[in-house]
Length: 271
Image 1 (spheres, rainbow, N blue to C red):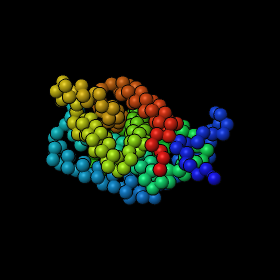
Image 2 (tube, one colour; image 1 turned 90 degrees about the vertical axis):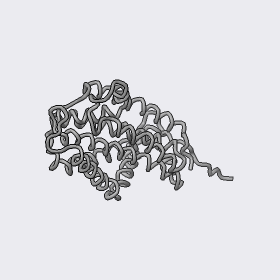
Image 3 (cartoon, rainbow, N blue to C red; image 1 turned 30 degrees about the vertical axis):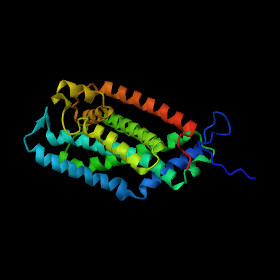
């Protein structure tokens, strides 16, 4: 009888050390096209939602004379909102793609070709980074006429946007692998991603927090993402940007190693 069993982990390349560049690129393009085809939902909707956040907080809490340090409140607020939208969409891209493929049973289309766990990880992770970057540019462009910020450091801004998107893209892969139904994925979004994003200095300076919560904020990777982007866009930072860059690099490296290990083992990848 013919063996029709499914493989539960991405296939390794036929030659040790060889990279299947065509397969990697094809999978990356497929993931990018997946969110581009529904751009109203994946890019335009975050822009509208973020502008609504901006309007509510700017009008209700900002006022014409409110400042955070030397910055007008709306200028302080804009980078945090941009980064919050960026990271949430990077997470959504990878987590939803893996979850939908598992539910529909077409995850086999990614497991059967000669694509290694590393290639699978690179394609999915950087497709999530791409969506995060696209959302960051779109939200920033929509918000600029109202906040009118000047980029102080393009290098810092780009680094923290990319690093933050990569971290949340990897978290999305972990969430997609772990989740067996959409309720599980919603739990990660509602009880992990959203609280960490909201409690990380998006709407306020952590310098105003009591000592305990000040320490909690500095243990939150989202704080370093938002603080780093705020530094790059306005020059204002509540922590050392070099420390933030190091924390995000270490976090991304740890998450990458964990994702790779789980993919190599085929963790919950069977349809």
